[in-house]
Image (cartoon, rainbow, N blue to C red; front, top):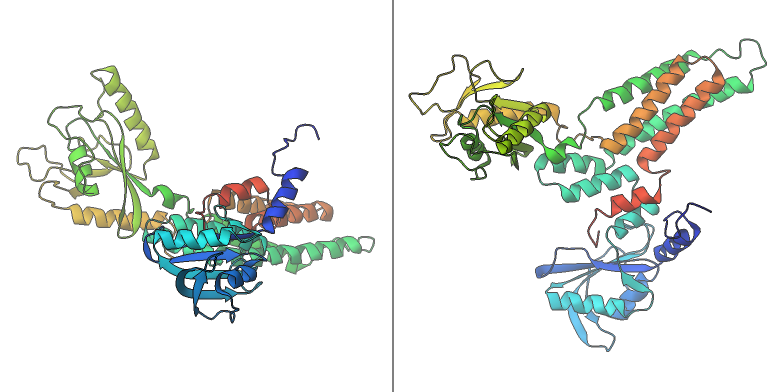
Length: 446
């Protein structure tokens, strides 16, 4: 056993500890932090029904809200609220589950949780433990769990819609169909190998070639879609140009905040300033940069210019406020001070804007939304995160290798590798380390 830590999640001791804790009955507040109008305390595990009896002294009809008093260990009334009883496996976690809908005051919630903690066999839930049990009990798969984690962290409408699609199983349904297709192809390869001694037995049927090509095309199309990770940072717009060209003023007007210091003194902006905002439900990151010029006045300004040039490489769109034609290739030409009469007027700008009067700002934002929507996942469309994209890429490459192969044994191995990649994508095979990282993103009570 050399090289395996005693506290490693995959050693025997860690496995036994996880199994014991998985049999515990857990509880936690699953609504917002008190005080609130209502506080919902969730209970899940084999002792959930006994916990209900201890608090209420009665039994309940499944999936029916019933008014009941909640009593502490001494018999004193703690609160009166609603009880919902969900016997497993038809529950959110796949095991016996109950919800106590209490008044949402801090003292009420604390008293109810203390009463639950006093019951033998119950303990407070860990972050993400309810969802992890749902995964372990087959109520959701790994792709759905990742979608749910993204849904809880969503800050824009586009993030919400994309996460909701994955949480509801849109990606999982595609993966299940692809997996079934790979299994059908594998069955045809096995048939060839079983009759390999017969004449012409190594010839694969036309249906094998057709199905394999269809799987490769479908996966390739899905891989070409924008990834969900882009929604986290948003569409990146960088304002660039020489010192005193109006970058910071325009930046402040777009993000509607005095985030950047503005001054008539050249070189005021020395570092990269970022602000993440949503426009029409689309996530953006706007970036103000140091003024670009060939000779920096001092070391700090030189460092700011270096970072500004690095931002140009990262940008989805560069808004160029400098001399016409001097910006990076593909940059938008911005005439940024349309309210200033004695400015150097650009002859063919993409947009004439004024951060002072607001001229052109609405059209500029609308254009950015339209461009961003083309490079980000469409609303409600299931999208791949980096982990999922990598595994689907593995499956796609394995199928492409199978398509080029002629030896049935090697083709069969390629198909096996493709199936394993798809299994890992939805969590049929996975590691505890990865699960710990995923479910650690959830709050307590989810």
